[in-house]
Length: 290
Image (cartoon, rainbow, N blue to C red):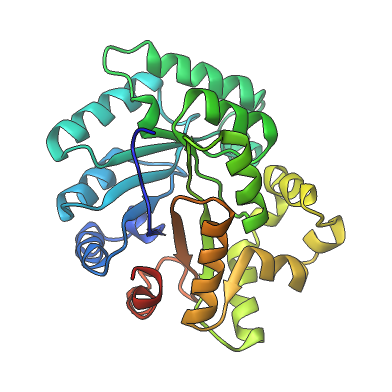
């Protein structure tokens, strides 16, 4: 195996789209708490500036994209920026690459989103054709279905699946093999009241419930159209977002590890979707980073 990533990390929109100074301070504290990686999304705008900001603010933590939207960045730009950032800050960068969703991409250009598996393969070809390609073991694919998981096995260092259950983690491990990374995201709500916790979870899930890529994947694991409709059934919500106290959340993270995950990145969900959730990450650290 090439690049190795273990332990528990953090997936956070605020680290990407929040105030840069606050993001840097938060990243430094998260590193001190023992979180081994910081993951940021990509739904438009500058991606590589925030990556540099987090790399400057930390010394040992892996910084990762969850994911780089391949429709929004040329392969040559991705490779060049990877080379620049690792030259400046050391070998602590993982580029998660994903095909995103038709709803988002077709808003920019009608009909642009097509043949996502083929597009991913072409994108990797483009990276490999550059003078400074992103190493295979420093890129992971946002793979949900069997064919994209095969591509993650054959042309990347592994997979970074989002909104998945431990059951999917087991399937991903079997698909990519023992020498590839499996790095799932896990949404969490640090709240013991069921109604409050599920209200927060449903708010975070609302946009994803209408995206076919996710819906089709959940159906592979026994969920139905009724589970996905009307804000999501309690069964689906509880499967995708773990809520409760620190021990309850730690058990779900451990279930991913038991299913074959090398590393799990937790995304704390609160009533403030763009908050840094530092209080929650501080409370969770003893249970997740020991």
